[in-house]
Structures are given as C-alpha cells and as structure tokens.
Length: 411
Image (cartoon, rainbow, N blue to C red):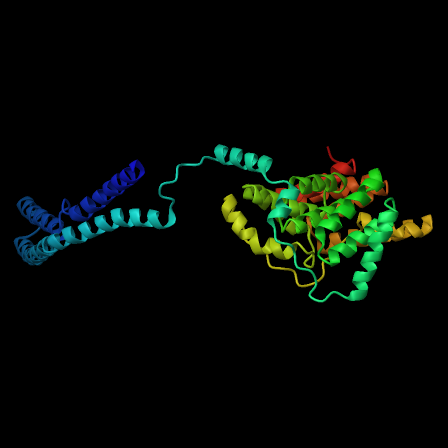
C-alpha cells in the first residue's frame, strides 16, 4: 500500500508541475508587438531631440514622424490580436492539463499493475544470490529426480536382433565385470535404447575401472547420460561429473553447456549467460549445444541485465586448428610422421589466423599447440598479438589467456 501511495504522490507532483507550466505558458512575457511599440515611441523621442539640436530639418522630421506613426499603429493592432489570442484558450488549457494530470497518475499505476509485481517485496541482489546458493545445495539428488521423471520413451520398434545382442552383452558384462571395452559398448547400446540409467551405471563402472586413465570425454559422456536419465535436470552427481570433465579439459563443450544449465536451474542466469556466451563463441555451427543455446541466450541476457545481440549463425563449416584429439589420433604413426603431421596442422592454422583471422578458441588452440611442441617463443609472440586483437573483448581475451598460461607464456 505504501508503495502505491508513494508512487501516486510522485506522479501527482509531476503532473501538477506540468499543469502549472502549461497554464502559465508565456503569460509573464510581453507580446513581441508590445516590444515593437516601445521601440517606435523611443524613436519618436529621438526625432524630437535631433530636431531641437538641428541635426535634421523640419521636413525630415515630419517624414520620419509619419513613418514611425504608421508602424506604431500596425504594432498596436498586432499587440491587441496577440493579447486576445493568449487569453482565449485558458479554459481549454485547464481542461487539457487536467486530462494530462489524470493520465500521468492513472497511467503510472495501471502500467505498474500490468508489468510490475504488485504485492511482492523487494529482492536485493545479495538475497537472490543467497537463495540461489541454497537452492543449489538443497536440490534433489539423481535418484530422487529420476523417480519424479516419466520413463523416457525408447525406439518405437527396436530391432529384435539388436535387443538380443544387448541381452547377450549384458550377460557377458555380468560375467566379466572388469571388461572396460564391454562396459563401454554396453553404455552406448543402453543409451541407444533410451535406457539412460543403465547406460550411466555402465559408464560409471567403466570410469571406475579406468581410474586415473579416465578422460574428459568419459566424464562428459557420463554427465550427458545422467542428465538424460533425469529428464534434463542437472543433479549433484551430474555436477560432480562436470567438475571431473573440466578438471581434465576446460574447453569441453558438453561440460560447459551442462554447467550453464545447472546455474540457470538454480537461479543464476547471469552466470549461465557468461558461460554460454563464451561457449557459443568457441563452437562450430554443428555442435549439438549450439541450437539450444541460441534459442535461449537472449532471454538469459535480459534476465542477467546484459545488452546482447545474438550474432548470425555461420553458414559454412567451422575452421578448426589442431586439438588434443587430433594429436591423439596420430598415435599409430611413427614419431617422425606424427611430428610432421602436427607441425603441418599448426602451420596451416598459423597461416590462416595471420591472413584471415579467427575465433578466440582458434588462437588458444594455436598457442596450446606451439606450447606442446616446445616453441614457447612463437607461442609468446602469438599471445602478444592476441592481446592486441582481443583487447576490446575481455571474454575472448580470457579464453586465449588461459591457453597462454597453460603454455607457460603468460603470468
């Protein structure tokens, strides 16, 4: 109630000031014709003075008196017309002013009733952050979330032979629980049948057997399966898998996407916006998270209080530099062949960035690759150039800086 009273009083004061301004108008100012009359009368006095001093003749004085008198008559008629015109709309001014005052007061209250939140208390940022933290700490666990979700539909008509093979695979894995390859195959086939819970259980067992050899992709796949099993919900267990993924690879797109989803589900759209904006800048158009991010990032920006315009989607395939996966695929080559392939990829990326430019992720890939090759001088030079290229884009510069720090060429 006090909010409405204060708002109405403020709007009424503003309306009153506008009304007084309209009514007063230029009433305190003399008409322009009245000023002309004063000038002409002063001219007549000057004519008499000049005649008395002998500056002008009597004939010249008579001619000037006649011309000034004619102008005085015209100015007097104009002054009377202006005065009549200024007095005529006074009642109408009151009426229009009253309507405007009512519109300001009533319109303000009506607008707030439509777009505001009547009855809701103020929620400062500190309270919202605290509420989001509490929501994150008390959110349901994976098992509880799965119980609340309807079972995901499987294929309409699964191939009977596929089902038979999966049953055999389950039996083999049960007999050989330490078979990493069997668990990997089982996880993939269970997921293909939309048995996501069985899939992530198999994936978890496979990761446990791998131990320290488990990769970022292993944990990213586990995160994906757990979120799918919970109907799109990111549980604390899925968050732990995200953390394991990012500890191994900070650029992993799957983990970054689900980390953003976690924050939006726990009331922190501002953090989600920052994560997803960086991920979108680093992604290729065909990456699976690009479409859902583009569908919701502008709404996130609005909720986060950010001025953001969604960039157009690239039409061609993304140009990528050498990644850790590319280098791993060269494991079957001889050391010399592998090194030649890697150096060729690095040089191609270097030439393209020098001639055509590229994304922050590609600059980061180039610096990381040069660091892996031991060419720290070149990596430092590229980092120095990147600081100039991305000086006006702090988020992109942060992406490149992280790679430069890992390569040991930035503090």
